[in-house]
Amino acid sequence: MTATASRPGPPRAVAARTLPLVDLEAAGRSAAERADTLDRLRGAAHELGFFSVAGHGIPRAVEADLLAATRTFFALPEDERRRISNLRSPHFRGYTSLATEHTLGKPDEREQLDIGDERDAIALGPDDPPHLRLVGPNQWPERVPELRPAVLRYQAEAGRVARTVLALLAEALGADAGWFDRWFDDEAVTTTKLVRYPAPPVGLAPADAGQGVGAHKDYGWLALVLQDEHQGLEVRADDGGWIEATPVPGTLVVNVGEALEVATGGYLRANVHRVVAPRDGADRYSVPFFLAPRYSAAVPPIALPAELAARARGVEQDPANPIYAEYGRKALVGWLRSHPEVARRHHADLLEDPQWNPTA
Image: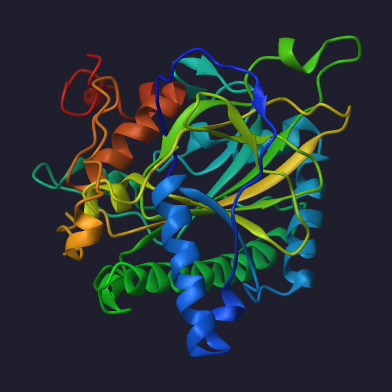
């Protein structure tokens, strides 16, 4: 569930605005508050595609333990981190060293640990779809034994929150709250990234430090982002400026993925966002969590009420980053592009096929 690149116009000044805030607890307090919550959620997902959620119910201790274990991992010597390098994994799992993941063909100034669902690799035959190569085990650091349980606890909580938001969105779109449930079987896909954005070297301005993550959209259903106290995530505004996703304790940032844009004919918006280098001289840590359907899913359109269907924008297509109906194809293309070294080492055959490498 990694990111896909997008090619917005030239960047402009950062906009002095904030993300909409939705209190999930309010949906259960009264009929009036539920209706108001659904209106807020629908409006935010339609207009900006990004919002913050409070009242999500994830214990603060679960978040704190995860961030603490994340910092401990990145404090290990680099040769120790490289013991679980993603270069060892055909499934794109493990540690990505600084500036080796790419967005828009440029290296991102971040290092991270990619973690997916705990599954065994599949013995594939010549007729099996290539996207099944993504199914496989995680890599965990031996010297940070607390990391694995901290991640798995958080993944369970984040998955619950993501499914809660999807159920509310379905209801806000005039469908049954369980409309999306059919894709949450044992093969549904989640990805968690533990990310460190290093502060620019002393004397180097953040603007000259390169991209934390280049401007892109996410594919899949939803992304949830747990941030530390440092600013970095920015969302594209309609006027071309950037809205800061300012960290607020007790909240998560949520954004719509391309699968939801496709399912709603563009009524819900997968929006462009980026991460800039830390500005305050300190490293920044974040944990994005991505929820997606099973790899074989081709999600049919949701039937919108007439008043909402009239406001659907259609699916935005970027020729450089096509959206495919089948989620697995989109996911594999995204991983191949984002991690070219892993792709060359384990999937050289796919890089010669335009179906999996559109630039071939």
